[in-house]
Length: 225
Image 1: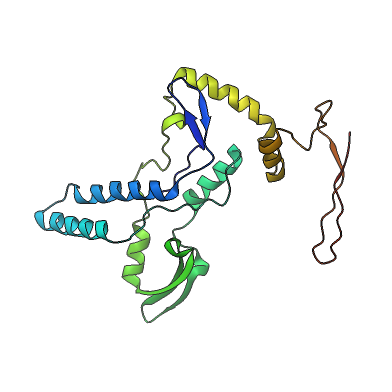
Image 2 (image 1 turned 30 degrees about the horizontal axis):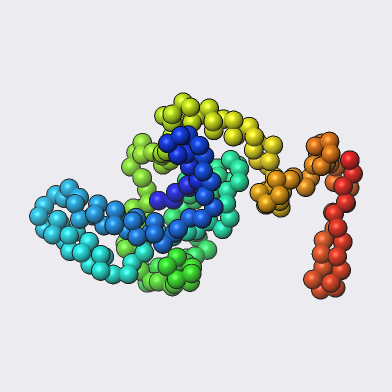
């Protein structure tokens, strides 16, 4: 499950409070407890499965097993980025073909990136049936909703908050297609460097040059009004 959360939220007075820091380790501990409780208290077909699930849950409580990871490289600054981020998990296969290294003698050798160890590459060899079973569990049931929205993302959000969010959306829409440089400059100085500081009209790019690490030369971008 992949979750996208806002860096902030509304208090009881409907005032938006921005929070730049997300405590991953704290959330990871809470998430682990919730997942293990679901395994332990599930509705199982027979007593044997129930005892096995309870045993596994008890072991996981005492192991240093992590179920939650911060995989985002940067903040999602606009709707297009968010859609692309979600969309790739809806359309991609559970494993990329290039990660399958070899298939011979009824065994499949592949590698994956271990999130718990800084995405270290781990090579694994499984028999075909076991390999396929691990792929099949990623196929959702028929009519299963792949995307669910909660909190201020929900359609049933409070009307007053919805109106506030609409105002906020219009306020930032001017910068929704901005580059990382624009967004960071705006967040720091409340200035969009691509707009004239006096008349607030978007400037035309006249020339784009880059800084050369090899030669040490510095050239600047030039804009015309």
